[in-house]
Image (tube, rainbow, N blue to C red; front, top):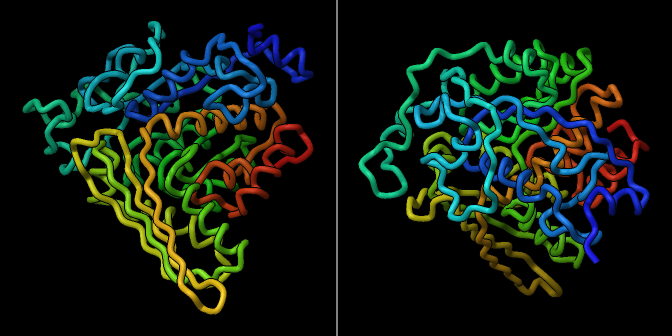
Amino acid sequence: MVICLRDYAERSGASVTSKKIRVAIAGVGNCASALVQGVSYYKGKTGSELVPGLMHTILGGYAVEDLEFVAAFDMDKKKVGKDLSEAIFAPPIALPMKIADVPRLGVEVMMGPVLDGAPEHLRKIPAYKGTSEYVFEVSDAKPVDVADVLRSTRTEVLVNLIPTGAGRATRYYADAAIKEAKAGFVNGIPEFIACDPEYQRIASANGVPIIGDDVKSQVGASILHRTLLKLFMDRGVKIKDTYQLNYAGDTDFVNLVHRGETKEVTKLSALESLVPYKIDTSVGFGFIRALGDCKMAIIRVRGEKFGGVPVEVEAKLTVIDGYNSAGVLIDCVRCAKIAMDRRIGGPLLSTSACFMKHPPKPLTDEVARQMLEEFIKGKSRE
């Protein structure tokens, strides 16, 4: 017997609301493409309690299909002016597979501010399909006032997915959402917004939630690495040193190679915050164009076990990076929405600790998940 997700939720006692979540996206790249496709993929999906790919089928009364995209911003000539349903498949998007046909959404991708989002190292890389085109060419359209667009579209949550290293542009979008339009802000990239005391103060005063910083993928290098470190500690092994090497061929990794300082900070924080003593930790990034959005991570952990005898674990992870973030972002958006429903502003501590590499308050994954479930059920404001 097949059961509609809403029917299942209602029969199992979960509260379901028919109200949509009005979502805007800054940066129409691989992660945005995966997010938008995912909403179409899970629409009307049938199944049992466990729906593959989702941590929460219904979260706070909201299904995945309740995400409604109302605005999108980019600066790429091949995307600006196009319907979002078309822009999410335009090069240099490098997803190696398509999971859903997305109907026309009636959402035009608008020209956002360039600021520091279009460095020269991105404009000089050949396109992924072997053509002579550059990765992107900045549109000559006039940038819109993002705060005005967020207000006019009644955006409730803005998801920031612009290029890594674009600190000024990130703060422009954060200001537009948090300070001006009073919309929730999900910061998916390694710039520090949720961890900034001033943004925390303003968000609390304006009653809007912030989730960040830098999304921790569903089964990504950071969560796998943290799991291995915890295994060593739980089994009484003293960790001596560890490293994580990451390779991919998308624009994010071009940025990581050329200006990945903040990403290194968030990666190291995600690992070192878990271990109660000092260890030698290294992270590295490499751009391999042929990989596209397929990411490979090599993780090694070395330690001393019984009698000082050495032990070493090396793991290799291969994932399609955009889809690896989408399931997490879907939950982040829904958590931001239920916080707004409950008039909770400021950084969402449990959501950020569970889903982000550099949260305002680092927690173990088990504690963060337990606190998150209490927040979703309304037993906690954090």
